[in-house]
Amino acid sequence: MNVLVVGGAGYIGSHMCKRLAEAGHHVVVLDNLSTGHRSAVQWGELVEASLGDGGAVAQTLRQHRIEVVMHFAASSLVGESMTDPYRYYANNVSATLSLLQAMHDNGVSQFVFSSTAAVFGEPETALIDEQHPCRPINPYGNSKLAVELMLDDAARAYGLRATALRYFNAAGACDSRLIGEKHEPETHLIPRLLRRAAGEALDVKVFGTDYATRDGTCVRDYVHVCDLADAHLLALEYSHVQPGFHRFNLGNGDGYTVLEVLRAAEDVVGRSLDIPHGPRRAGDPAMLVASSDKARKVLGWRPRRADIRQIVEDAWAWHQQPAY
Ligand code: UDP
Image (cartoon, rainbow, N blue to C red):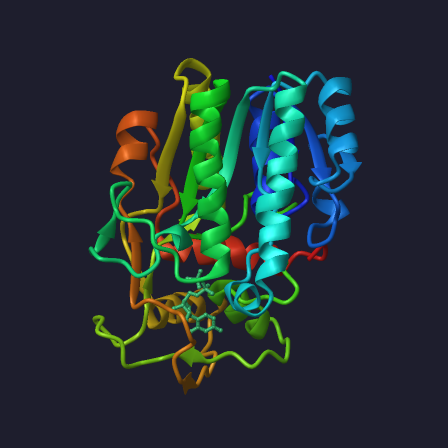
């Protein structure tokens, strides 16, 4: 199929492009390079434009006879969304609406959307499945939920075939070492630990040691970026034959505490990282772990790189590349 990957110069988007190309699909990337990297676009032509630019999007859809749009481009910093919510509604909601309108106007009827565990807010159960109530606690989560609601409406009204994939904590990098995680600023635990290990002067702390968890630090469900790409491909195939709007939670179902991740990182880099304990970070729930039963049963998804050590090893290999 001809697939437009919006945000394909970013971390998860670039892994998706690689996976799509391996599966024989024709890939076109649309990205404004505001946070993505030109060097990450290796499996398809780059159209340098914003997703909110209806004219550029419409022309790209027509020129490349696009059949499916996969949408990874978003502002995704929870803290920033609290202080600048308009930016989140503009980039994540309004620009996505413009993308969907351009697809509708040009007869493109299949859409795969990067959503997030942040749509759930404070977890009410240990494992979060698709029935869990959606009550986001920040504008970032609200903006992603708003798009999910639009997709549900669009599926009913226009016959859009749409899938929202709610990722828990994406991490790792593909074996090729050609692409990986490179955010500025970097807020995520694993790349912060590894950048620190690589000698960057990052002030990394364990955020909170008084949570009601097995060692007092937060539990998160880390899922390998290549496993996420596999899930998207399966979702694409599923929604091709199954009309409507579908939601899937994507995680390993196993949580690791911050201290367990730190130990894995120390193991992989072969020395102590000397990370001090600090206060809690505002807005962090104690535990966020996915039930991915639905993705496993309905899509046949099997995460193949669920072990935290493997995830950290792959991320570390990327961080040591000259390209990084
Ligand atoms: N964390 C930490 N120190 C850091 C960055 C993150 O202790 O420098 C913790 C954070 O409080 C959370 C976990 O690591 O409990 C994962 O955070 P991350 O930002 O990677 O992902 P999130 O779960 O917020 O999406």
